[in-house]
View 1 (cartoon, helix red, strand yellow):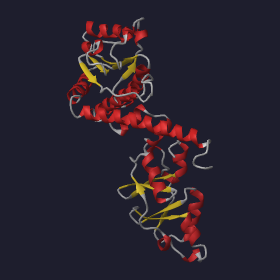
View 2 (cartoon, rainbow, N blue to C red):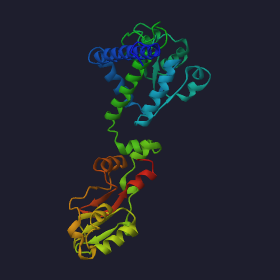
View 3 (spheres, one colour):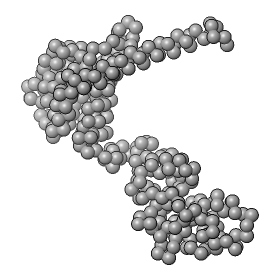
View 4 (cartoon, helix red, strand yellow):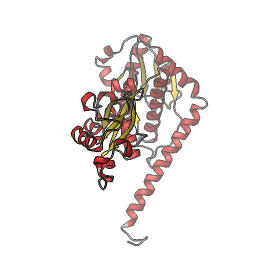
Length: 331
């Protein structure tokens, strides 16, 4: 296809449009970062402090595209240690205000700050002195005037050529919401263990599983003592079906490993005359029982191996094979 052929023009136009969109939204995020270093710094810190002090939950609300972003922000908060849920303002005006308690906090989202649908939940927050955080670009808007803390977003052009479809505006709302969630996560000392509690499903949950929960233990661990002849080690390798044999010394400490690859590379020799000491790898890759499955997968891929020995105080307490990780969905 020639560079100037008609078939390529739609492709070029589409890519050019995509690049303009990315550049426009990138400029908006850069403006938000600049605001966070200046006028938005103090309100943002107040918002984090306010949410971290409440005894209840965070109620996120918004309408239209802001509502869709609000749903995601509520989910991010909830999965990172800040109990939260989304309440649609229309439903709030028809009974769901009863879901909001005095020890909660409200995050209300509206780019203009003038969404009439929000006024019921805003009035409710003022009546019962429920902390109200506004995420808006309308500095003098009704929402901003009512809020305890205003996270004022910088005015930025939409990527839409007509300036109509919410694009940059929704992205900035999403980014500041993510920033809140992560700042609260760090303030609470939220750890991968906490995250695992809230996220048991999917590949993410699988990657946060501890190796100790899936490793092969007891009689399933393929062991051979120093000095063991290779025929016996090969029998152990075949019976245990882990792809390796852990070589231990007289104290039971791990001193090496033999893999099926090691056996294959030495088939030209008389294995009956060879001890495990002669061909074992003396620096096997090991992990401790508290290692995350995701970390174990990364090690297996990095070193192109099929199994890891799990040790405590140099003693082999388990073996985790690639298939064990595949079974739980971590691979």
